[in-house]
Image 1 (cartoon, rainbow, N blue to C red):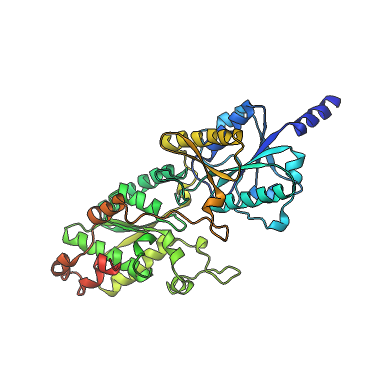
Image 2: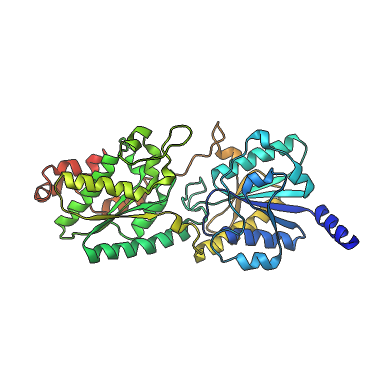
Length: 417
């Protein structure tokens, strides 16, 4: 009994780090957790994984897991997360220092997107105001690739999710060719179109639609539908009666509630009266509106919806993310040893560990602006101009055998380019 009490006392006195995972899953989380756990265990720290994110951190009975080397080593290559994730965002009034003091915490490691990072920064400031010195370092995670990291540095999970998305999209394309149908694919992406663009470009899909394309016009469902039909007709002119169009779900974030509700879909609504987009398939909406329009213009084309969302988030990480997430995990220890806090850990293509301070990234409201697809980049311009198939002025005469008003389906006119 005395040995038990002594053991628990020593565990409590031991310096510890705590790891929290926020938001949704992304391939490579376990690689980051594994790497961070190993390097800090090696240095004599207790490594605590906190289930349930920030909600558990300020709970009287936190749900947690103690990492040893064997557990950390076992999860290194696995998809998903060994630490239960949460999107819970605490209010300032919920902050307290109990957990940090009781477990002698020296570092809070957060793995997540901008909301998770911003909350960690708020907590760090709260602790500083109460004379409790805790470092916090954030590891940037999202398959959306939309955090403002240095040029050429992706968010971890993006490449693995894109790889799985490409595998599925290629299979769907073969189905389209085999059946002579069209498929409308929706790809996850909160505000930015990186994932849809990356999948579409890799698969040479004839139509890619991302929110950034609408930089000179208002984004509407009608324009999305006409862009897809532009590709359908162009392919028919080329003698190809099948195809795949991919649309980023990010387009919804640039539409008004009125535009979304006008789609005809029966939405549920949140407490603020906004349609709950998470309860519906975006691919179903795009495809349904396309079918209505095809019927209206008497174009006999069958199309089917495919959703790329949850299927991508917990796949096993590809070799790029296995290496990259390992470097980010090592980088956490490097920044910690340098006394750095309130920063995002990054690793450039050469492997250099560089901190990005949250205070430098946030706007006046504390919000970190998303990194959007650069429409002026050479890669994007080449794919849009050379890789996709759509109607232009030179196609009007040929297109009239399928539609009476091809100018309404001119790709560049729709976008006001």
